[in-house]
Length: 257
Ligand code: HXC
Image (spheres, rainbow, N blue to C red):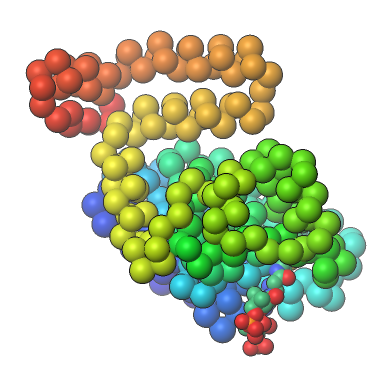
């Protein structure tokens, strides 16, 4: 299938969605949102896919929501169409999603990266929530996900000044899992995605759900969910295979069941 604003590539059990609006530094207009979310949901329904990578270009992961598309909108328009609500569906995808970020990840671009499961950044990456310089505030989860990831002090600093932070500061602050040289970004991320896609998909989904529960539930509730899912993993063939493979001193081959 052809898309206007993204490229989609499958390699074994990994799929990569590349945002491709180079003239606008990958600004996220409604077409990008629709295409990314539609494809991610399709891939999520496909048990042949065990990991999804979302990336942009060397210059920009995404320089934000599309300011041209938004600038003339009225309150009732953005409110009644619930602008950006489509992105919430990406956060509900159960297959692991990795953001591979090089260059600018600003505003909605930073928020898109943060709503993926984790971020691997090139040393060229720049993160920021510059919405305040445009007379708005983050609207795709930035005030919440950034604050949970980096704490109040740095979140307030970034959201109130609109300044950018480089990859090193982003890793130190906890929004980025790893920083790699820009030339190696895609290769490293695809290897990481391949590793994840080689695990049991249902168990990877349980692991993702359990980690996410840490952000949404009181500790006792999260621990209960974790314990139930841990027990449930024993209902899978893949638990039997994984443990038999360890004891047999051989690599596991998971069947995703
Ligand atoms: C629409 C954008 C854009 C954006 C860049 N472009 N960012 N178009 N929406 N968010 C366009 C420019 O208008 C320009 O188009 C082309 O991309 C190249 O950009 P330049 O500014 O010429 O590039 P450069 O000088 O290298 O500067 C890069 C930059 C700058 C520092 C990233 O583009 C920038 O500050 N962009 C805006 C970043 C931002 O404020 N993002 C937050 C958006 S609000 P032309 O046609 O002139 O060549 C947001 C939150 C909304 O995301 C609420 C929640 C989602």
